[in-house]
Image (tube, rainbow, N blue to C red; front, side):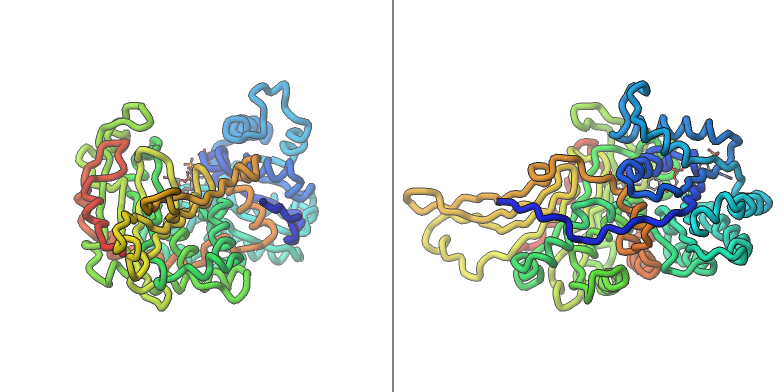
Length: 503
Ligand SMILES: NC(=O)C1=CN([C@@H]2O[C@H](COP(=O)(O)OP(=O)(O)OC[C@H]3O[C@@H](n4cnc5c(N)ncnc54)[C@H](OP(=O)(O)O)[C@@H]3O)[C@@H](O)[C@H]2O)C=CC1
Ligand SMILES: O=C1O[C@H](COP(=O)(O)O)[C@@H](O)[C@H](O)[C@H]1O
């Protein structure tokens, strides 16, 4: 029987604030931020006085911006009906919160105008002086915008306001270690670390958060979470989509920067970290950083031996023909940029030494699947085999993060009758059987946390730098990716690459 307990965790009322979105006409704002803000508005998880100021280059009215916002919410959120005639009442109140402010990131005088606008008593005072700056812009603008905020901040701060100032940054947090350090340096010259929220949307996913609940609220699993019993951990993020028209971006990023350095490392650190001393942002992030400090290529060997690069060729995904990566718009005809990477790493600490962690990320795979799979060791004596009974039992714990959120545990059972036979069975738990409503969007959860000032689900500066520091040796490798047809689960070489003795 499944017991659903009343939610005892404290629910914080977000304070009123001015939510300034730089890059307000961009793809991220339309697909994710405005739909998430509308979801929060509907749930009453945004203060009635909170005002959203969209900032971007093109000149347009607030009315024009509101119209674009509704189009975005209608297309990308499940909360608006297809027919505008059926729009709910609360949409009007939401739109009244939204305003547009044209500004060029390259013009200092535009930022002076922004400061003046914010200092208007009708604006900042109404929200007790609280400001949240959200950088939803191409990364090249992160430092210039932070510098401009640094320039106007003394003016905002000397206005007698008592409110907070927070900064949200979107990935990528740099493209290598030096650029990540430069970004952190710039940000921390204007903001204190506790004012900064670096978004990795994987941390907003419900089942990613469930990794810690599974481990730390359930001694039965917590006790079975180390090299003593685990032989191998697989973390895989398979996507069926390709690069979605982002050829120019992907040519510079590749899957290592796009997925592994951030999302897969978040899954890795949450899976491998020690229990924190308390459930607060810094205690959790301290433990995640320790995992990254102990991370080495498999057996401490050469990075080139611990990675396999792949790139999708022409093929078919979900019964649709798909072009090769090299044929995508914005991609060089002879590009060697990887759309797939398989890595073998080790965490050289007391809990994990000697356990291979297999990390795999790939575009244009046969299916969408984000999973963490823990393989358990076999018994020290193969009792049933010695008795002549076929026994393939392997205990496997699978945490499915998407698309079907759930947990399953595989174990061996006796087949009824004789002779003695052992079959495999799964104990499974599927989220949607118990919670039929769709889970909240990752961005809603993360934006709510920024508004209440909880940084637990955000990356800290040292965490980002440690992840890049580990990645450096891999980024400089000659790629020479193995080709795989779109729709296959990576290059065939991966079978040999991962053929480590799991017993
Ligand atoms: N898109 C996505 O799904 C995801 C994006 N991200 C990250 O989010 C960030 C934003 O990405 P995305 O929304 O795709 O970017 P877009 O290129 O779609 O948006 C760019 C925005 O910046 C504005 N802008 C560009 N140059 C200037 C300028 N000189 N002065 C003023 N405004 C300017 C544009 O305004 P205008 O239209 O007026 O020119 C537009 O609003 C990036 O860091 C990206 O890596 C992270 C995860 C997912
Ligand atoms: O950050 C990114 O993530 C998406 C995958 O996100 P998901 O929530 O659908 O798993 C990826 O497609 C994109 O390339 C990358 O920039």
